[in-house]
Length: 266
Length: 96
Image 1 (cartoon, rainbow over the protein chains, first blue to last red):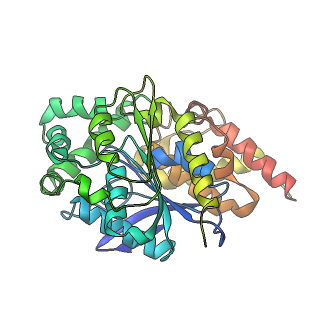
Image 2: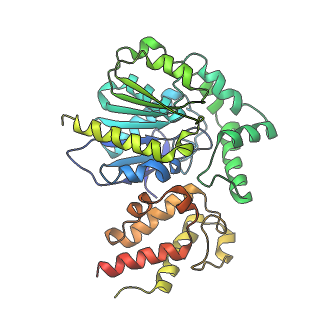
Image 3: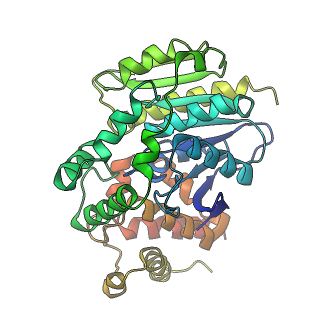
């Protein structure tokens, strides 16, 4: 298994495609708790890797990365991302693509390191506006069956259904992350993104939202502060657009990345 | 010489056992007809690890990631060992 050791964590990474000196590397960031890099692997990453160098990694505590006890704040994940890019693609600016919570990590990374980001694609992203931490941790802080139901609702696996073995293992992993680490407390203490944080951010950004996603309206408001952002609404979809409209999402991201590669002045 | 389907099946079955690395998988019979999702109950992240091992084992002659890229999720979910084996054998026979 390919790994990057950084910041006291072993990060599981997958590198796809071929390094190309004439193109930007593309980095995918997955969502929170029940998610891992496989959701990108089976939807968009391999298709994009036909024409670009692609990096996928599991966030700390997720998938096949190690699970440290602490440092799960959004800014910790941003510095994890910087370290993983440093160890793989080097210092060249990259195109970042994030799903749900992963989109927040990407946007925060762009705010903290604007010169390192060539373009951003956000897929039904939690954009970390005021109140985001409370909303996000409300589900995670539930106990027992209530939490299992909430997690089951919010997570759709690649199978769309869970066998007994998978359900048990996913639940155990989620429970460990929530109960044995400082994840919930760290997210609660993470600061929100404000419109004024985004007004100077000129990174070309494509944001996709489900028409019926709870995140759509607050995110649209925040994105109006970003000068080079474009929002596309997918009709009839909820938060899980990566699963509900996989082909559309893939097509739009591949086209967006292609356009951004052309505009790249390497 | 191109390996036979049976030889490739043995290799892939061994890689599956390495990825899952739990006691129960040692006892399970893995055949051409075994389904990744319904019978082996591989998690998606385990399938990614398996794809990486297949790629590492066969090298450039087998573009496993490229093959998956052309598939929709429901096709990957429905995969049986035999289809993976046939793909690998086809790649190896054309690269002779």
